[in-house]
Every structure is written in C-alpha cells, then in structure tokens.
Length: 406
Image 1 (cartoon, rainbow, N blue to C red):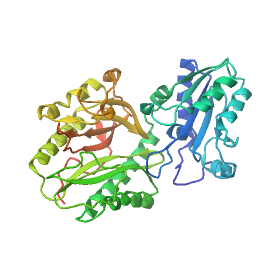
Image 2 (tube, one colour):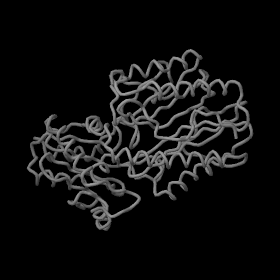
Image 3 (tube, rainbow, N blue to C red):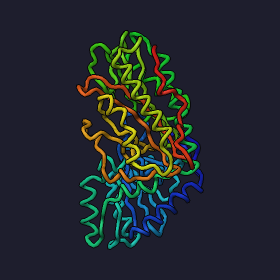
C-alpha cells in the first residue's frame, strides 16, 4: 500500500488495474510483447515530470527512471540510487524495484533476458508527450539493440498516449482538485499585482499556494509590458526581477496540480484602462474562448475547432498557439485550431488531427490567443476543460474571459 504523501498522491488499486488492463489490450492488439517506458525531464516547476513512468509506477527516480512493462508478467521499476529504494518502495505501486546503479539500460536488458524476450517485439515509450519527439538516450538504444539483435524495437509513445486520453473518474477528481488549486493561485496573483512588484514575486505566489495545498507547480509564465510601447506578446517562462508599471498589460500562465494532474490558466489583465487595441484584442479573445466552451461537445472534430477561429481572422489578427490542445499531465494530442500563417512551431497543426473526434472523459485546454500581425501585441485567455457525456465542462472557476483592471 502506498504511503500517503504529496509528491505521488496515491490512486486506488482498482485504478492501476484499469490502467494495466487497458494498456495490455492495446499491446496485444498491436503485437507488442513488452514496453520499455523511459522517465526523465520535468517542466520548470516543482513537479518531477517523467509522466509516462509515473502513470504506471506512481514514482519517478532522480534524473531518470525505467519501467519494464511485459504483456504477461508484472512490471519492474528501475532507479539510479540504491539509498532511494526504501522511499521508492513506500511510494510506488510497483513491487519489483531494482537498482542497477547508474547503468539503467543494462538493468533493463537483464530483465528482458529474464523474461525470455530476446527476440520479442518491444515498444519504446518516451518520457514526455509525443509532441516533443523524445524517446530514449541514444546510448540506451544502442545498448538495447546490440544486446538483443533478434528483437524488434519501435517507438510507441503516441500510441501509449492514446491509451491515456480517456480519463477515469479518479483521474477527473484529481483534475478538479488541480483546477481548484490553480484558481486560487491565479486569483492571488491578480490580487497581489501592484505597481512596483517584481514578476518573480508574482511567480512565487504559485509556489506558495501549491505548498499550502499539497500540490505541485508544473510551469509558470509571468511578465508585463507597457501597452503604449509593448516589448513582448508572450510572457516570460522564467520571470525576471522586472517590475510591473502603470499602463502595463500583465500576462500569466499558471499550472498547479495534484497527483500528477494539472490545471492551467492563461490570464491577461491590465494596470489601468486598456488601450484601444488591447481592448479590441481582449474582446476577440473572450468571444472565441467563450464560444469554444459553448460550442464544442463530444463528437466535435478538429475541423470544428478550426471554424471557431473566424473572429480572429476577421479582426485581422493571427494566433500563436492552437485553440484546443490535449492536457492532463502536460501537453498531449490533439493540437487543433491553428491559423495557417501563424508563427512558430507551436502553432503547427498536424493535418491528421483535423479528423480527431472528441469523446467523454478527454481533458483539453482551451486557449484563445489573438496577436497583431506585427507581433507586438497579444492577449491570451484559457483554462482546462473536460468533455462530459453531452458538453464541454470548464474545470476552473477563475473568470478568465472577464476583463480585469487593477
């Protein structure tokens, strides 16, 4: 039984049985004898990241982790530090936890040999969303293929991700708790904003709220810029000691979570009455955001999302990020609702996702982000939502589409 804690809040045994059963159905249908699931990397907050290993094990080791997940045997967790074993045994739902030293790949190979999988079909699952196109270190891949020349290895991160898209009731309860924490953090940030406060001080409020609530912070963007002479249209992911000034527009992206699931709010507010262009931008952003939550429902597709961008186009603006993106433990598919001439890789939309059909239990971020074509002014409005049986439900109570003047 998992010891109660804040870092890896436990789910029920039934939840892990559901995850394992669903995953093995996929593996069986896809002809996979085993998965090698790699864990590494986090965002910039206090969450440990390693989302795919945590999904199976409820634990992430320092630096990196592996889970070997066979089709017909119990999974094994590999960590790098032997003196972390007692803590890992308290927190992980996997009972077979091993310490092969820093050479985790060697330990994984030994386990595959124990399982008789020298000529197996093995799926490799990367440490984060398939969106980032990261699998395993090249040294580890060479170790696997050289040790088992008769085996077939292929990356299945996207397929693994697809198994996770429909959330259970337990997962949605964690999402609701995460959203509530994020609401508190964003509201406290807004209320604390005053002339002279540092951007980094506003960021720290998110950490304070997460600490008080037993949560974690996955990411934070905070900055402000003069409306009269804007220097940026996207807030800083590493907030500086610059200070908020009268006549600034403030933009934040705050994500606080619980049990590996996160809320997220994209907020824009103003230090004084907004300048005409910013008022117009905010009005367009609010209209698109509100319509997306009202119009989207189970059965809607990526093409339906694209049509919601009409007000941004008609106003002569572009946008920087897709209107709808999958979200629970960081970004995941789909990523739909981009303007063709948008800037930056983050706006690129996979045309295969235009036919993506939304289903009950899927969580998404709705993020309306009109930007002037000279790339000098922009505002964003967004929150995390879940598809129910008949609608898209906003998990947040923070009034993101309400124009706020400090």
